Length: 219
Image (tube, rainbow, N blue to C red; front, side):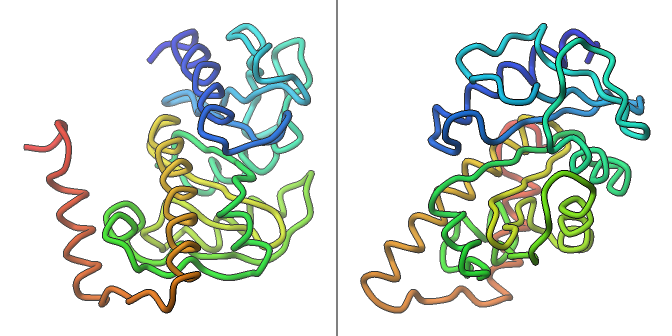
């Protein structure tokens, strides 16, 4: 993927945040790492989603946080950069404050794995990390601490929101959409009673099947 193709892709994916009701106003962001480079594209700070264009995306150095474009980058840039530095296989990151998932974060609770869709996509419960202040690397450190050896591409940050990772920005967006969807369904199930957990053995089988055989990219 070329620089301009990634810039366009990251810009276009931001429209999916309000479309899927994952954010309000200008909160949330998407970033993408340039393959083989030490740079990422991320949205500018405080620009309305309906006004975002590819030329607004900020090219930021992952090491120095220097921005090579005219707009001021997202206040979460240090978080995204830290995750990219520590997790080299990550190519895309999405941050949301989606309401159902963030409600679990406000309680400081993992989302229990009671749905096959959760086993497929997340490989078990969606974990909730600790509290971290916004603006520096603290959130990034907590995301990496929780996800480094965890099958889930999503983590809840206590009292904050959701971060998802993936090999591409598109994969991270899928995880963000799925995280909110299952957070809502599990919440609804809990209003009716006590959801039945899936065994660890069955979770592993479901996750393995989904990761190896689902979709068109597996043979």
